[in-house]
Image (cartoon, rainbow, N blue to C red):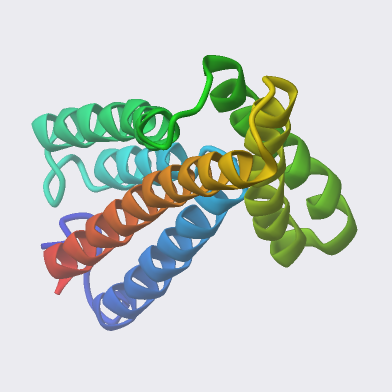
Length: 178
């Protein structure tokens, strides 16, 4: 299965490959929660992996399928957030502020507390952005909280979907080498 490697190296290669896949998968899944392009980090890794292996373990059509899936997930993440906000009765401005608040919160708290701060910043920023938008639109604090929770849940659902897909792709890659 490894055409470019022979002899003693073939024992270490599957172990190193396994560790590399696990590491890249974990990095990709975490960076998704930091509002960074974790799914595309995984895609680049898959392309390099396939290219180094002469597209034997992962074919070019499989890479195109994964690219399509990653693009779909990017769109779906925003759609889920918007749908959840809309379902909760949000104004368009509030949905936008939820996204902007998530990005701003990730940057601010992420710079202070790195990974934990970035995740908390995403959640708190999304909530506060949607809440502020609804409050400014004249909604009561209770209505604003309901909408903010809805926008937050949509954002979390999108991130969970992207992270889970990245992990599933990592597991698929591990199955390919074993």
